[in-house]
Length: 428
Image 1 (cartoon, rainbow, N blue to C red):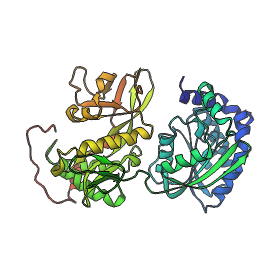
Image 2 (cartoon, one colour):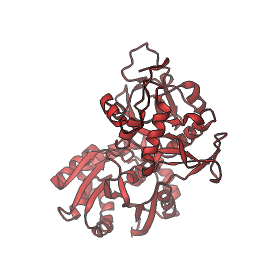
Image 3 (spheres, helix red, strand yellow):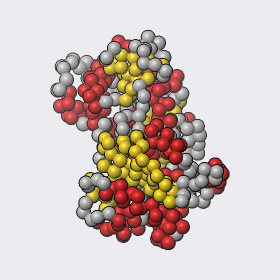
Image 4 (cartoon, rainbow, N blue to C red):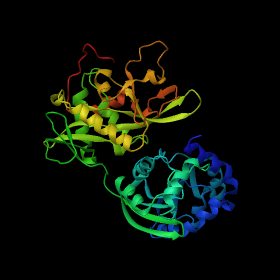
């Protein structure tokens, strides 16, 4: 049983008696610091990640806040609903895949659960995504003595409760900064507990210089003729224009990809931290983005994965290696966030150079594709080696990619007119 399942099983088993358990007694003294920090706000929307049985919300004044809680353990959510009734809304959800849109919470709380997270970067990225700009993360966690911590982190491998890693203060602060948070304060709340307050800052991904002639990424300086950086809100129209120009009459008369990205940016599955553009001479010349989706495994499991695109480079810059540079950079960032694999539709001749192979070789099938049909368009790359070992099943395209032709036509009216042509090789 892996660490995640140990965590789920442990807290499902102890949910009904959590308050009297060693976990419940351990976490109780941590509530005061969190409640005091929340009290500094005038109100707003609060999300508790790893909310357990909802006890934290019982210490807050009724009616002042909009309260939401998520937990990995189904039984904990049942107890939370009993404890607070209609005062709060609860969902069974993973900290690495929060079921909320971007920029919706004023405060995110994560108390005594972070040391269970196998992919801390992915969890922090999700918390940052759902926080409003300038919103606060309130994070409490165990804090073993410095001399014992390395030993305890070795022992966690044998933990039956799903413990994964205990953090020192410097280690945690570095992790917060890496994932786009500015630490505000840090203080011990007990002999073996610590409480961090951090604010959401601008996008954490640095700009990276690219040589527009060779496609080489230069991470050490920005004196090249291009940069890879996160997409900004003010880039959105230019990105849509770029995509429209790159895809026009390629797969169909006209194109829909510029409308697809317009829609996907507001989809809960959109990964804003993996939304990149390439810029040269003040002009956007490339872009790539990712969405979260799943493999419905044959053994009943749901395996989280990413899909990708639209991805493009401006037509006049094709053949220079820029597309591969953008692709490799964004895949590296996705791996750094803890995502396990990417599956999508593409040409093996190009994407194979970046480590993609046919998905059927992993035992993954494309949804709705009849048995025996050509699946050579369906590609996969593991970002964590062995992530798909023992997995067979069906990949599901996120619903956001399915757009109505009438909506595309209406959206396209806002762009300069272009002639739609039926050309050989189009697939629609």
